Amino acid sequence: MTISINAAFDSGNIVVENVDGTSARLSIRKDRESDFFQWFHFRVSCAVGDALDLAITGLADSAYPDGWSGYAACASTDRENWFRLDTSYDAKMGGGTLTIQHTAESQILYIAYFAPYSMERHHDLVAQVAECEGVTYRCLGTSLEGQPIDCLEIGTGDTQVWLYARQHPGESMAEWWMEGALEKLIDPADPHARSLRAKCRFHIVPNMNPDGSRRGHLRTNFAGVNLNREWDNPTAERSPEVLAVRNAMDESGVDWAMDVHGDEAIPAVFLAGFEGIPSLKPAQTEKYKAFETALAANTPDFQVDLGYAESAPGQANLSMSTTQLAERFGAVSMTIEMPFKDNRDLPDPVAGWSPERSKLLAHACLATLDQLL
Image (cartoon, rainbow, N blue to C red):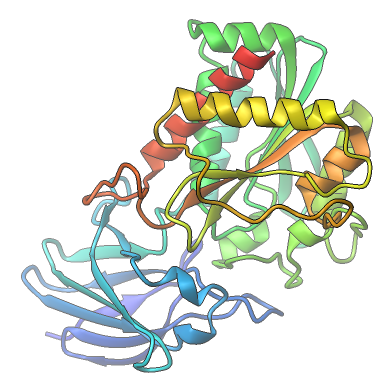
């Protein structure tokens, strides 16, 4: 029997170069109007017991080739529970080849770069949360393909908190984080949530890039634009998603902000801040460092050893949201990064970094914010 491979569905991305029995040679389609590629998501139809041997080639030219070493592909038979597959990477073979091997235990197997967060699940999440007491729904605008930029607002306090995710659509762990944050904030019994709702007004954008998400992009929107390089000058033609969110932020102001992402190469959870902005204030830095220290104490899934190099004074890239918001509003803003790989400090050989841990990290972030406020 010969296997078949298909990616014609929400967030699907794979190019089938060749199939021979239970083996296949594959490649990844680039983002539209862009050279970025790394996200993959496809379905294998096979027979139980098939020895699958799947080679994804050409990865030396992918967006983050350093991300493949030590990485294991995600898989699911029911699209609910995700586990990791035996995976190896050879930088010298086939222009960089990721080889996935698995003995099939079902007739259909979904394989992805990380557990996908579908647009249907997104709409379910928004609809369910919008029905909760004390929640206000707003459509901030639309994407280039006309999809809504959804925003959920919660809380009666004066501190303006913005949480937003999936500027880079292939970083699906970011919306799993958002699901966890919303679950916690709407819980009437959760003490941190009750405290935060009294102190803050939360503005939550679970997905800033619905077009890229549906199309199976790694990093860009319909126009091939990296939204996290548009915050200093967003336009309706290139980046209406950023323009809509930033305009809403201008209306409300921003005191605290968290931009949720995933990192391809670093096997850890870490924060990136705004240390290089021109108008940096000591109080901003103190609050950011206090949050970082407290989060490390609150969850062993977070650490401070691994991360990005800090920008030199005055050298921050203000086209990025975290630095733009810190400079524009004097906000305590931050980017939180989760791994596509496993967590180096607390490895899970079955699931690696997972949707469940992404959601629990959101709980810890909110509890930490409550402590600091």
